[in-house]
Image 1 (tube, rainbow, N blue to C red):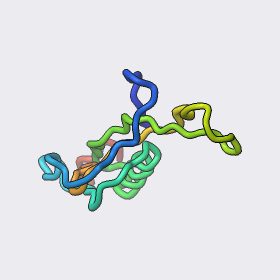
Image 2: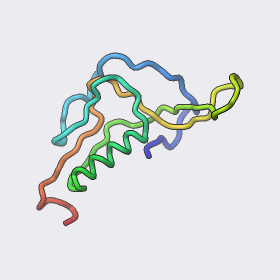
Image 3: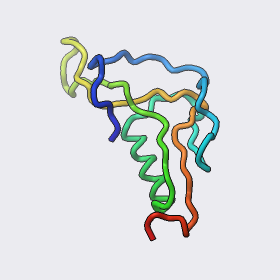
Length: 117
């Protein structure tokens, strides 16, 4: 799964994501693309699941570019813990995807150009 090697701060604020993306919504390379229709937080597990589904659907014949990276830590407190005593430990990673942002691109190569037969 995707996650940064190191970060400046261990925990981060939740933040707000509103509006459309400023760039990265046009298809500059590749033949197909996944586009976010509404602003939402995407976890590293969701990005990995989408990558696996795309490569399986293409039968590993093309190339996939993931254009987003989960760089914001999400902290959670363990279950059945009383209120207070600070913020929980970092549990997972996510990225904020704005509306109309291109998340990934792919190219499906024709049969003769495949790397593996």
